[in-house]
Length: 264
Image 1 (tube, one colour):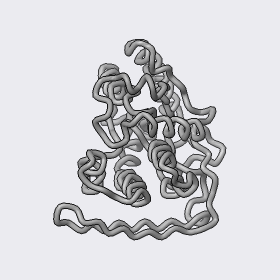
Image 2 (cartoon, rainbow, N blue to C red; image 1 turned 135 degrees about the vertical axis):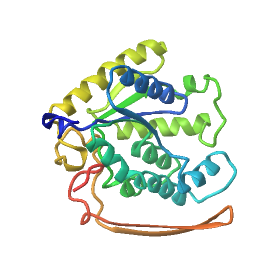
Image 3 (spheres, rainbow, N blue to C red; image 1 turned 120 degrees about the vertical axis):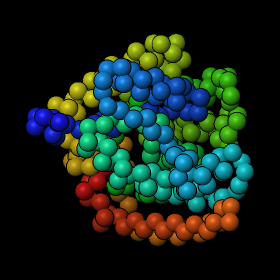
């Protein structure tokens, strides 16, 4: 039975970001194994989550099996994160650390790289939980393109990845931890282990939960400026004999009083 002194211990929300083939997925798996060895409750998450209904639509799109409007795709990616938000919050409150392979930052970087307005791209992400730690695996698009398996999915195109890299530079701020992804895998892992372990300890020692952080709290890793208009999108998409209606209604600045990626 959990002791009274551990009742308020929460898990850490740790996000790994970077270009395609930067090594995020491998390092997420290594971190998960490391935490398991240390006896720290942790789960490995990945966005998009292709196991959900929305995720299956995204998977088909990424594999070039379907065509969708860029705005619709962006909202699908955002909806995929929103459908996991409640579970994410419950896991964190229960003391489970989440290692997340891609999050809202990827959604904004990739969609704005297509030419969509970056402020428009940020809007559906408001209200999602703010990460405790954002780890960016830094690699040039040219170096990433040399790695095995490159080009297997829609976005793995060199020129597009260059645009994504530029958008990441816009999103990055002083709270992000930048790791040289060109270093040997073991050296990258060593740096990540220390940063992640320190973050988990800080959360256990009383750092506020992402959903209740203040506007100047370090949990707000990206400073998304507020919008003064509302967005009401209804997307009806037919997929494998299923018609799925996704309705996203966002009112800004009225719905969320805190900074982006945090909630009231």
